[in-house]
Image (cartoon, rainbow, N blue to C red):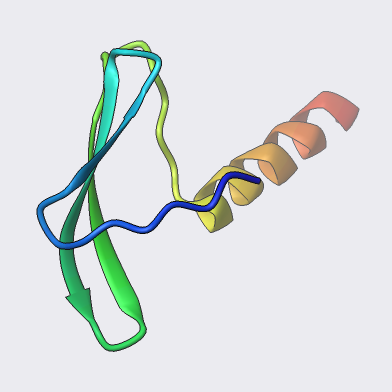
Length: 61
């Protein structure tokens, strides 16, 4: 795992076409903005896991 430190307004660039921006830091929460091509799917981890579980149920049915 790569660990980076960023301040509000600073970016992380992934693969030249995905930009993650620190929008806000408030206490123990960080708000991030993501700019990515439309063909790149971006989910919060809990949403991604729920989708994976739902797809597994459909595949076993």
